[in-house]
Length: 473
Image (cartoon, rainbow, N blue to C red; front, side):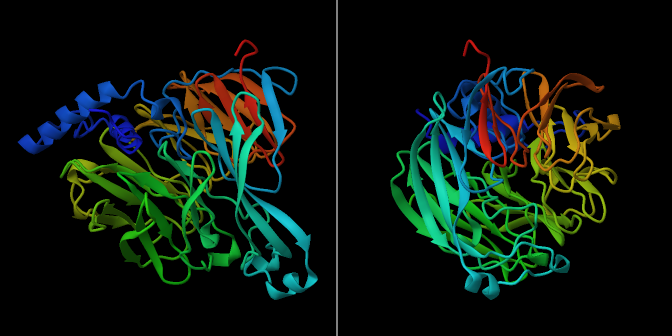
């Protein structure tokens, strides 16, 4: 039976998880049902190794949601004069990581219109000691399709033109959320501006306005939607009435909505298999609690101890576990065993291990098979753990050439790419010790995360978008 792009994307996450249902690799399946789920996952995993999703980058953390390109093999060394296939200017601003499907990249931006003194007076900075950036003009919130081969703009749509209703952090943008695709439709989320859906030729299909967020300290919005099984899941944690909502991907109709007792979070949900019923679940990290919801019904499946203030990193999953972390005014990292997760997981065996130092503030962790990599706060200080046991492989250790980091590490072909805000991209070898392969520098700064597809590395800077690939490509 031919698999739809929705099914392929869901199976990719299932393959990344492995569904081993083990405790540090030793626990056998506890029921015939779990055994059946494992067998089905193993069978389907072999069928999707060469699928379209695995050769694309359909969401901001890649096909498996873990930062890894399973078929990627981009150059190790590059510069402005070497292995840059093309470099194009991107109008406006945006720290949204591009996504890739087929022949195109899809990029979200906020392009300022003419300034207005009256507009500037209408929206004052909120919080952060008055140091935030208040909008002084309307912006065009744009969706652009870029040809992978040439770098030319295939099409562009203005989703909305309006002035943002709140300020943003001085290092942030008004286009910080990444798009997501199922290979049939493109879902572009601009937070309080709305969710806009197009076919891959750029024709508008539907849109939804979920209201206006009130963000803690006026720092701006940033959580991206998640997508699987014909549902787009949108998080809405802010200073008002927080909730999480699932929309029908074909029509935009609301499928379910759950209220959340949460303050602002910027963490993107992760959709993973549910080993208890063979379906899928939506895992969220936040300050008050970590939670999981049934994707089909929205029912709360389990909850556990919360993370720190300002949770930004997205969860990653593998080895039958999901890993949640944050690192502002504290350190939190927990590995949740999905086969054991039900109800309140604070007691019992569901929390496999925890780690309480050197966790990330902005960058999300990278899960590469059995290895979990993460940066300390927003720095180039790296820690690597055994994902099954939580045992230290190495670190914290400073990665040479890397300074201030917002971008999340990305990996392919046994290598990890770490980009910083000063334009440096260091490539290290995966493994139980830090081994630097190259440190590269480009004439831009990178807040969006690196994207890898086949032999190509895409880097969205503050002003330009790069395609890095070998000259023979």
